[in-house]
Image 1 (tube, rainbow, N blue to C red):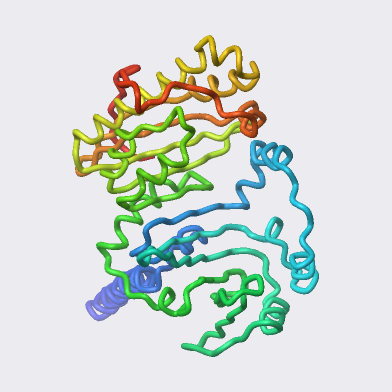
Image 2 (image 1 turned 180 degrees about the horizontal axis):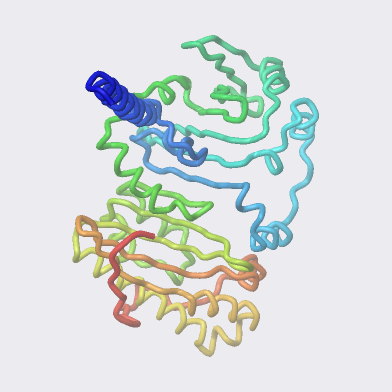
Length: 364
């Protein structure tokens, strides 16, 4: 092999290396700039606004295959067929309980009001849905997109939606859908959501809440009277993030709730209070009065849930988290529509630690 041939081969190899390297750079750049992450789930979550106060995600495709969800559907009362919805199904061929694959919903607080933005993946007949929307609504071209606006239940309120592709729709109750679609997102704002979305990747249903001063009061107001605790409400208000995730496991649903704070003291106090609340609830259910007043099956269902509860602390370096895990079983579902159990009010008793919560490092 002469020198010229060697040079030619070296040149070809060099060009090939440059081509492969350039292609790799272009590929990752396109992924970053377009928000494409390969998975439909990740793509939908990437479209969520970075300034949202909460994001909810449901993978209906996975949930429909879970035995627990089938039991839940069979247990729940079946709604009566609505004439308007029946007409919608007949004219569009779309039924939400059958044709939605996944949905990601973001809530933005704007003073006393809230704006909702959602990305819905499913089986859509684009032509039929567009025609149906134009019957009572309107459409307008904007930025190369056809945006539809339809009234809600005969009121002045409207919902705007657009086909991002044939199997994906974006919609909002805001007057300007383009605000969500064309929003510029700072990498530091997106990073906080991305970390938690990745951490919850194994859950087909989850909700992520960013710090909100009213979060503790809101959750406390929804709790049964005996489980309300002003101390717990105050600690929840000090969290930077709160996540709730559900994962069906055979005939039950494993629920994981995690609160994150930058302060070790907050995490420690929250773990103690949660353990104390569980102790009080168990004590209330074992009280003579509760035994006399509650249906035995109902009492056992709540005891089963409380016995499955586990509180632990997780140290991720820059954040200190407290995790509560419990199981919802078919027995609990059966008892859920019955009377709430009578338990001591946590506000009137100082909770004691049931056990020292384990400290973990890692992800959900």
